[in-house]
Each structure stands twice: as C-alpha cells, then as structure tokens.
Length: 422
Image (tube, rainbow, N blue to C red; front, side, top):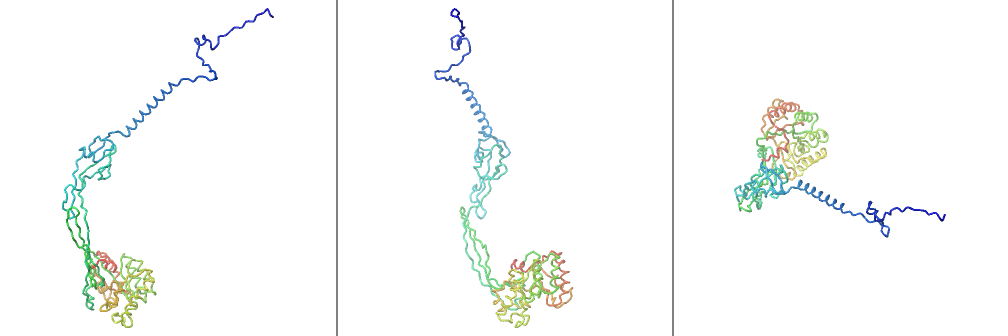
C-alpha cells in the first residue's frame, strides 16, 4: 500500500486567472458573502426617454385642445384670433365696426349721441351685450349696431284730492241710468319725471280723481256688445229652472234678484244659478212688505230698510256658502231720498233697468220678445222669474236668447257691467 501512489488531477479553479480570462465572468461573493449589484445606467436612460416622449405627447394634446390661436367666424368671415379673445378684442382688431346706439331723453329725443349700447351680438346664437364675452374655438359670432337706451330718471308724485259730487236724490233722477252707485271718492295722482342726464321734465296725471257721491249711469261699454238680462221675484217653482235651462243651453248668464223669504224653500235653484255662472242678488227680504206697502222701501224707517237688505244678504250667504254681492234692486225702482244715504254703508250698487219688458202684465210672449230685442249695448233688461205665472216670459226668453247671441251679443252679469264704469 505504501508503495502505491494515488494521483489526483487538479481542475482549474473558477477563480483562477485562466478561468477569468478564458471564460465568462462569474461574480464572486465578498467577505460578507454578498454579491455585487449590476449597474443600471441603461434603465435610467430608458426611463428618461419615456418621460420625455410622454411629455411631448401631452404637450401635443394640450396644444391641440388649447391652441394659442384658433379660428372663429365673425359676421360670416372666418378669422384667426388669440385664445380667449373677447368681443371687445375682435372689435378693436377691426373684425367688426358696430355703431353705438344713442342715449335717449325721457321725451324720446337724443340726449347723448352714441351713449347707448355700444353693440349687439350673438355668440353661437346666444344674445349678449357684454364686451368681455370670451370667444371659444369655432365660435360663430354676429356683431351688429348697438341699440338706443333710455336715460334714467327721477320720479316724484303729488296727490290730487278728490271732490264731492253734487247729488240728486230725487225720484226722477233714478231713471237717468240703470246703475246707481254711491262712490266714496278716490284721490288722483300727478306724476313728474326728470331725466337724470337731459334734465327734461314730464308731468302727467297718472290717476284721475273720482269725486265722491251718488252716480247714476248706464254702463259705458264702448264697442262691446254686452247686455244684462235680469229676473226679479224668484226663486219660483218650475219657472226659475226653465229659464236656467235656456241659459245653460246657450252658454249665457243672467242676474237674479231674489226675494229673501223664498230662498230657503228653493235653495236648489239658487245654488244652480251660482253653478251656471249667474249672479244672485237681493230684491229685499219680503218685497218691502209692511210699512213699505209691498213696493216702496222709502216708506220704511232706516232700521227697516237696513233689515230688508241685511236679511236678504244673510239667507243668500247661508244657501250659497259665500258672501253675496252687496247689490240691491229696490222693489218698484223706488230708491231715492234718504234711503240712498241710509243704505250707502250696506249697498255697493242699486240696479234699475233700461228696458222694461212689462212681462209682469203678461202682454203675450211676442210683446215680451220684441221688447227684449230692442236692447242696446250696455243696457239692463227687466224680467221676472217669480211672482206669478211667467210662462210667457219663459217662451219669450227661449226665442230671444239664441237670437241675441246670433247677433253677436254677450249676455253678462251686473258685476260685469259695473266693471266697465261710466
């Protein structure tokens, strides 16, 4: 064994010089067992290049979306403007040359030439007078001459005291018109304007004074073909409903002056009057019975007169559920003397008539019809739906109402006539 020798072939070490020179570099751990890091210079350069490309792309997109200059159309011409240029800028650049409007005095004359709106414009169809309006890319702009404007002014007012109308309370004066209204009077008003720039002064009466007092008149309806049919002494069995049927069928309205002590018994008819747009007023509580002798409230004491009216209102309020119009027709048209002053706080208007059909006499349906058809615009026609046999009245009304409408008349209520004034 001792004579034998073993032989070991030595392989080149990985750390040998020949290995380092002749083969691939294999990193070796340091004394701490760590391997050296690879150099990353190439990665950093690539990242910087990528950032630069991204920045250039973003810049390109920004300048595409928000170019420093772009085209717009002004009065049909395409022009290039700076981004966010205003209407004032394009006018200053000469792309439009609007002429300013004038500042007008309050009398309509020119106070300051060129002192009005400097221009009128639309931007994409939207009107504007703001010179600082910015113009977006591809905007369509129309710029025209400015409008005239009115100067500001100072206003002062002066009250015109109303006067007292001379009152004729005689029985004969009643027939001067169908509407009898005691008006409390209304002050008028003078208005003065002074132009703040021109100094021009304009004074005018803006509200006419209305004298207090008792006015007797027929409604001044101008060219309007309006008339008022009125019916007294109802409500009444059958007749009231028959007349309401005619009005409803023709789309017409009327005014009913009711006897208060009959209203509860025929409440359905009164409620129907209201439902059809007719007007229901009082013809006193019991047609001035007692000291009024059934026809004349002027024979009654002031207390009795007031009770006749107030009780008439009360029952209508109860049946209709609303406050009735404070409008009265005095029995027999007897509304004169002290009765006017006694009832003034309770009656807004007393209503007479212009056309008396005298249907209460039962002269025949033809005679009643002819009298109805004699009416003129603004007038009040007197008829009766109660107080007796009114079949002739019903027949005449059934013929007259459609004929009046065919002639262009509008059949209205007393409130409608009162609204016209005198």
